[in-house]
Length: 187
Image (cartoon, rainbow, N blue to C red; front, side, top):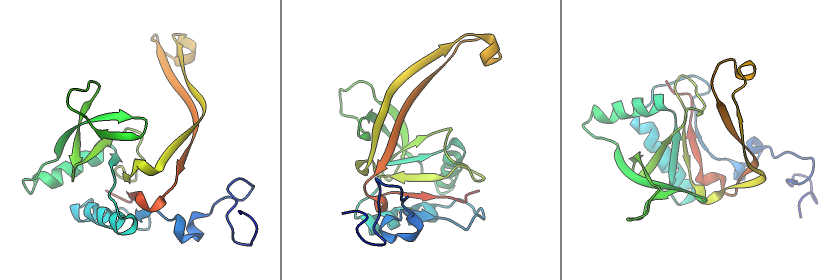
């Protein structure tokens, strides 16, 4: 049981998991000690190999920003290779390839047949970081279901318009850190 011995993790008590002190809780992070370096295909492929060696499986989705996606595309184009394209569906268990005849899918870029989802909220060093995730081991425990708020009060939003937002409260849970990875310190 948790907390019986010194050094045991206590996720439900007051102790906080110190991932830097526990090798079993390490994910795969390729960093350059906060010194930005050029994005390269070798670096991206290295993370694929590192995740596979540590977890025995590859990521099923990649998250990054538009700036990194364009830099990545420029690397591929210089060698006359291109991003693949695939049709994916968002699901409760992540993102998966769409089944023929099913509505609600959209086209995205892919690399090694892994869909690349672009987000304006990706963490940025000089360019956005790359996150390679295996959503089989990521879960969201919802504390409060999604709610929608909308206002057209010009004194609140400082313009004559209507703005809305969705709010969901939850906790992201990862059950297998080694199946996840990121590349940071990119330019």
